[in-house]
Each structure stands twice: as structure tokens, then as C-alpha cells.
Length: 357
Picture (spheres, rainbow, N blue to C red):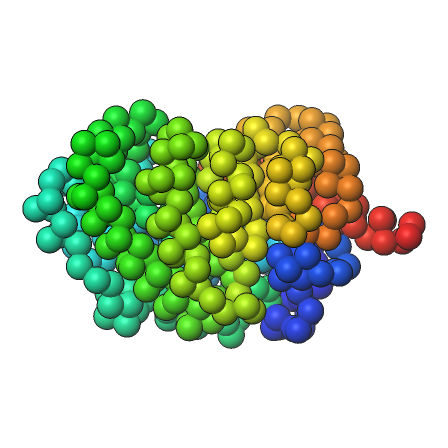
């Protein structure tokens, strides 16, 4: 499928994705997928090579090529940088790796005030210069807006404290409750690191940013408001360029959607468990919504995929503030042909609606 931007060889002033982020009039529903660049693509596996994602992300030419692959294959309306939310803390030598099939694993997890010394301010031009170089390449070669991103302080903190992915977050919750001063210091440091990372990406050419707070829904809303929300707000409020849309995403966040928005988001990403009409009632029309096809549906029959896609589009009721996406990342076993079909359906729907107006 041909992307309308590809023939231009650059991102013009008009972008359906950016317009939707701002809730402005645009020609069709924009679509991109979280983890659209990755293991589901045979061309990714061909150039991926050995080593961890952190090593691949540190190679600007290869990272840029991987970022572009889903744009070229699917004709999506935005490209998200091929990197990882742990890159900043990895780059300052906290001692964390991405283990295949597991996720972020800390060699020595964060346990006490003494571990604060293991976290220093991020110097982007030195520590993550390769991220900026990747985005600069994409600014020249990518035909659609490039999304920079970072992990929210809470989600990154949970990996440092737990030492590996966890759905219970027992150690994280214990530190919050039993050592509030240490928790606040840790979150302050991570907030500054996150801001430095995002500003570097914007200065390098990113057109939008997304803050991933994947595990925000695993804690009680009251705890989120007191212990997490202030730091996400600090990060997002520090990105004050009105031309750079800010997307805030988390899993299981329906009870705190208002806070996800109030943290400073222009766009709230919702998971597959929150119907888009429910999210719209909670958020109103002043916030754009991104989502929210269940990634697992994409593993099933095409008829089920089509049904789910059309249901989401119907629930949105042609609200201009909608970016079609998944409710989480692309599952590695997903057939690329299914995602290509989703893009085609989404784009065709908007064109059909526009014709009928």
C-alpha cells in the first residue's frame, strides 16, 4: 500500500497524525502501531543481528533503517523511534540489560538510599548521542512524523527496584510506603533524566513524544495520584513546545484517565480494555485519544480483525481527535499482512466518511 507521504520524500506541513493530535481537521484517521518495528517483520529479523536491543539501538544507521521498515511496508502515518525505555539508565551505567524473552533485568536492583548514587544526570550529547543521530537521519529520510519516547519515571523505577518485570510490584510498593523520602528522591532523579532524554530527541528532530507509563494501572488510583502523578506531570510540563504533541500511555488506566490527561497530555493512549466511547466520556473532547485494537485479535481470523477495527471506528464517531493504534505493542507472531490490512481499513474508512459528507 502506498503512503501519500512517500512520493513527497518528506513530511509536509500537513500531517494527519499531527492534526489528529491537535484535534484539527484532517483527511483521514491516522494509524500507527506500538512496536510496529520489530520481530513481526521479516526484514527486521534480517538486519537485527546478534546482541541486545540496547546494542542495536546504539547503531544509528541500523536503528533508523529499522524505524523506517514499518513505514515502508504498511504506510503508517507516524514512525516511532526504534529504541527502548531503559536506554537512558543503561547509558549512565546503572547496570541493566534487556534479556530476550524476559525484559529489563537489573544486575543489582535499587534497594536503599545508597543506590541513589548510581544514578547521575543524563548528558544526552555524551551518553545517548546515538539517539540524536538516529533521529537526525530519520528527519532527512522519514516521510512521516517521527515520535520520540521515554519511559515514565514510575515504570522505569519499577524495573530498577524489582530487578525484572513484575506484575505485583511488591518491592516498588514497599519502597513507596516505607521509604517515602527515598522514593521521592528516586523519582526526582528519574524525572530529570526523562526530561533530558525527551528534550534531546525533540532538539534532534522528533515531531511528537510519547511517555510510556505501562505499569501505572497496577497501583491504586489514590497511590498513583500521590506518588506517581506529580512526576509524570513534571516531565510533561517540562516539554512546553506547543508544536510538539505529547502522548501519555499506560495499561489498565481507565480509573485514572483524568489524571493521565491532567499530567499534561495532548493525547491519551488507552489499552484494549477501555472502550473508546467510555474514554471519550471521561476525557471530553479537549483531549485526543490513541488506540485501541487488542493486539491478540490480530493473531486471529481476518474477519474478527475487521469486526474489531470497524467497531473502534464506529465508537469514535468520526471525532477528529483519534489516532488509531493497538492497545499495547505488536505481538511478535503477528502476520504483517494483517497489520497492512488494518492500515488499509482505517484509511479507507476515513476516505469513505469524507466522501459521504
